[in-house]
Length: 65
Image (cartoon, rainbow, N blue to C red):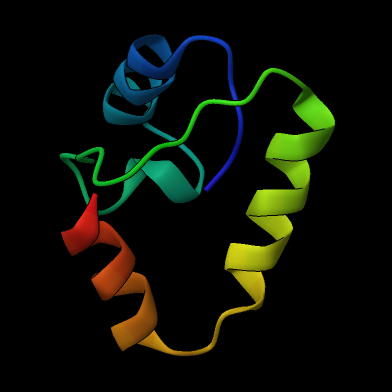
């Protein structure tokens, strides 16, 4: 999870990185995204999603997307 103004570029950087957390589990696939006018709104949403402890709730969100 995270926020960016360049979704495709961020995904590409994750898949070509050879160090750090994103270097494992390749290839990364984008499963869900939302757009916001304000970065603060994106951060609030990200914080809310990260608090979810239920894998099934997250999978349901992705399926509905």
